[in-house]
Length: 146
Image 1 (cartoon, rainbow, N blue to C red):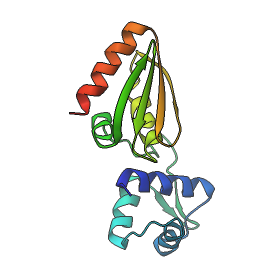
Image 2: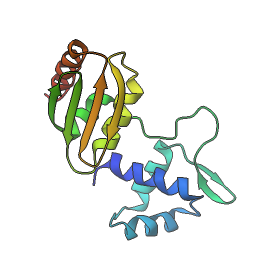
Image 3: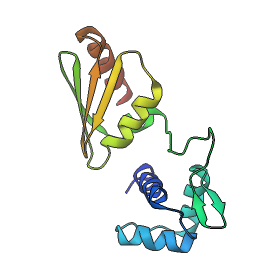
């Protein structure tokens, strides 16, 4: 499992409630089939900027981003397998479980060509403003894959 996917699961778990401690988080991840060392988990918590409270680890309040925000070029290079265009739509095929992190990274870029994204497990749909802008976006994304 990739670091980004693991961190996405940690974020999902924090949405369910405070995480009492790192040991409990290790158990929760283990139940999902994710084996992680304490050192790796500690780095994840730091990178995600989770805050330790008396109730446990929680998402930060305020303007700090709660989601891991890797560079779009990195997630495209790491996860995207195919970019296909159908007029003003792009269908992006990813490795299993990676469409949502790719969508998050693309949405974070706030590109003018992107009207919106919809992500499943291994497929992402990007709606673009026109056929022309979809082609430009396709070229941009394909360049990131190399």
